[in-house]
Image (cartoon, rainbow over all chains, first blue to last red; front, side, top):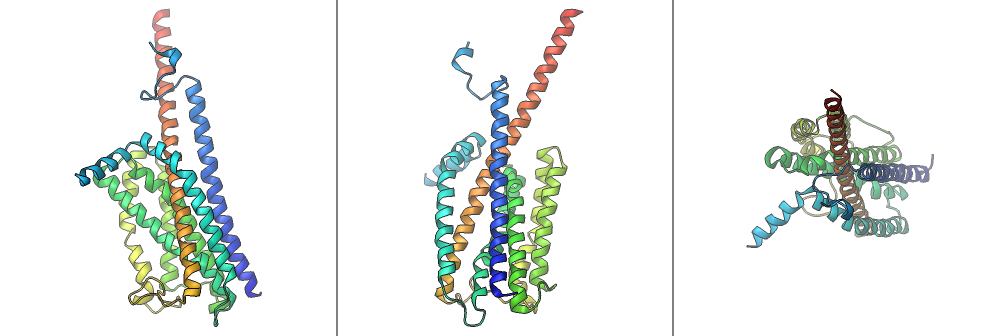
Length: 57
Length: 260
């Protein structure tokens, strides 16, 4: 195996792990954000969240 | 007065809603700066000449060393957050160490894998159980243990306290990793950048290394802020689902009372 193989493998592995990490954080964020939006749409809100205009007493 | 202003700012940040608003503002900038730094760092890494002894394999240093630094820095951030959890009960401290553990595990894995790939052509072996390599491997196992512990407990408060104690106990491994090459006779070389008497690396190699180190550090902080934001959202989803279940339960009770 040439030195080029070791260099390419090192950069490849570092890139693969970093990209997996970025994808995981991004997909996790997207999923949680969607869940929160679904809960809000079904009327489940945190007490501190301001109510929409139509629902104000 | 300035001290009071700083304290007020820190207290403001303890509010998860303020943190979310700050994260939304700074994340695009952090991601952009990280991408630019990586572009410059990678260009310099591949534009430079090889070392007179190691040849082109010196390029492995530009990913191995920053990942190894980050594996220790991430644990230090977790230790500071653990103190924040146990001493000040800061609402974001346990969110911080829970979000940092998978990042630390990933950077430690990069350091171990690239170190092994550098070791084979330079030392003639993929792995030796010397003090530096073994202590970094122990750090990797500690990260995995902390991730498992956090996932095994349903109560985030209890998980945070138990993890914090474990993180602080495990922090003893960080100085062991740093000074292992001085305390024991290891195959791994001694420190050549952060050492008394200054760096022993030629500036041709030092600049790409420092820029790659800053790029990796920015990547860590960008992902850490994003992962903390995700964790806050996860807890809100869980709290809102509990609230929805309570509301549904109350409605059922009222209907049953009216029917009786």
